[in-house]
Length: 326
Image 1 (cartoon, rainbow, N blue to C red):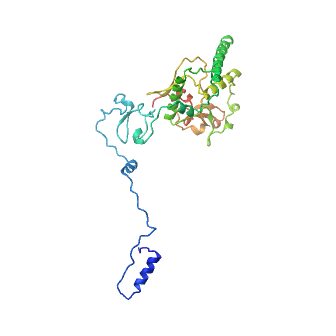
Image 2 (image 1 turned 90 degrees about the horizontal axis):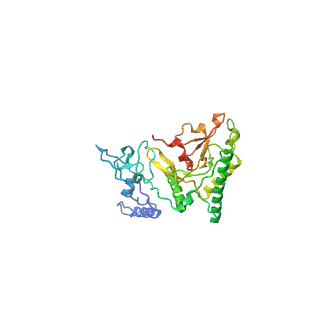
């Protein structure tokens, strides 16, 4: 291909060719301003980060131990990284692995995944969107009212033999409540879920108008005035960061489960089941293990379920459906 020159170079070339000398001459080379810039070579770190990895299989894996705890026990929970070929217990890595993964698995270091850190008080307040009270005296007054109301309801239950919902009693120690909320935040973050205390109606799923009590097959039970007040009281306590006395813990066989952190009376309201609302027909082949029926309609195509796979609250871990091993 003939090299390109600027107009001044071409003119010089023509003048030289018109001279009396028969010798073939060329214009001096000048660097063009349109020449491509020099390519920046990638570092070895960048190349290795994108290069495909190859794992050399060992002949014997009997001596594999966990890189975190150093123990080789519980080999049924020991995972091998498909990149570095090192062993990790399912509950030793951060975030923990709830189920044995299907296919390849990379440890947090090889996958570049950030470690799950402990939640500070400010992070917990932001995570649960806790509303700050203007006066701490109002909180104490409301809590005292809840205790008095609970005692009054208890006496009504005894006298009339009618079972009413009781509001939960949050732990009095603020540090203990932070620990309880921190355990829930860790579990939700591990499952890459967002906290939500309400039902969510998203695009492509069921609309809010599809969730009507009148659509329920056989009718729906209506909360009494006292139970509705208890429900609103518990919602208000949750918004203030006064949570039920519960801890979310990890079990190697059952995954995340919930333990009581204090005495809880029978018929105590704990939480509402929340998550994404969708039609049952859209979730027939869904692998979410904690779906809950919300509305049962005569026409199955209009029945609704709650799917706490992307957002939810502590009820997702209380539900016993998800407490199983593979």
